[in-house]
Length: 579
Image (cartoon, rainbow, N blue to C red):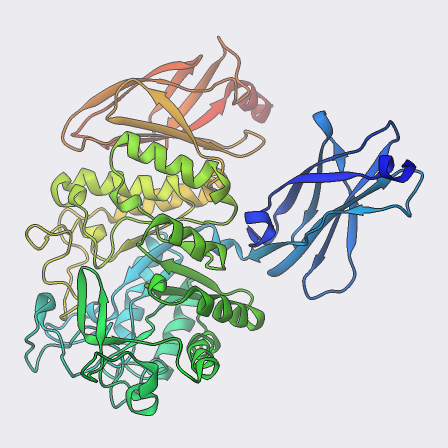
């Protein structure tokens, strides 16, 4: 009985995902906080230790946890390298170290580079970076555009597929089932007699040319992200080498791919459960490792929700064991539970439904889910304003201001965001009645005038500069919304923990009309007392306003910038700096 009284209870660990089934996500350099309820019967003092180790090490390290109110304890340790860490908790009565209670689970942390959380992506379609009509661009043409992309402030260049393109059932312009000899086909139809997923499309150049392109990016501190599409054209070498890796209709004809309502007559889905499953899975893994060895550390994975989860668990673990700095972006526009599950099993970033969240209520409710619930522990959003397949109605109809608003929202609501080339030109020509670009480079060569009238390149550059210079914008969990009395005005802020860097964003969601609002800022949360003046400076216009208390007024004209990005300066903090 004496020992049972001294037995310590350990429960309500945070963070812990699904009872410890999945790892939480963090970045190198983070201080990792663990909370737990730890208590016992009786009055003896207890010791509570947070135990942790890098997953490849045998020995555990311990740090003493500190007691908080109501038997809640907290402990911390630093995450010093990428890979997996493990942690658990032990406790015992102070005078009886031999009677140790230990939490019954060992929990994991998936530690990634900072780029997994914070990055500005530019999606580049390789074939449309040249200057000659009806001809493919080359890797050399793509290299020439890097200086401009860097000048806009992007640090990731994401390439759509660069592999050889199939000829059978080749698609024509605008996804036509009839193609001419001059049509290049869809680059998502991968593989021909020149190779498959480990080769490059000959019109772009050679493998050596690609490696030179990667080196050119790296010299500018730009990472290359590559689109990996685990499906095959009818001409892919896998078709003859491994016919059992594919699906067949009842008549014995190989089954082409579908992602309802879309049909891909020029592409076959892979069967991930053939008799030689592990051989097949290892071959898929080798595609990623092939490109990782060529200098690619970031992969955007196409339609991962159409492949088995068990395959991804196998694949991601094997790749990360050898390349722990690798980042995987899940392009899964599917039901939210599956999107979350893919993040839990190891995808470092995820596409989201941001593209279709346009009203104040939609944005507030969705962002609270992403940043203020348990999702924030494992689901890193990457907000894309548009994609080759998605041209939202808001951009089709909203004019230049709509592009500015969506870029600011993407870049400040989320620590990672991206645009698809053409966004900087406010390109909004759509297939009638659809959210798709007309005459898309997905099916044809295209030459862009990157300096055409009406572009917003300087605006994008300014936003990315603001992101880089304000560390509060490098995170997601610190997002808080500000009440407004106009549903067309969205306001929110991000701040560093010490409140020395505070950014307030106010956006006019109605791109056609002037809107004003009273906004109710949490000045006391910023350590600014009532009746104390403070300054807010619009980092876009340079205008400075003096505010006091919580209640303040803003106005956004449709003829001027549709957003304010205010930097808050406390007067007493300013005075200290001046002294």
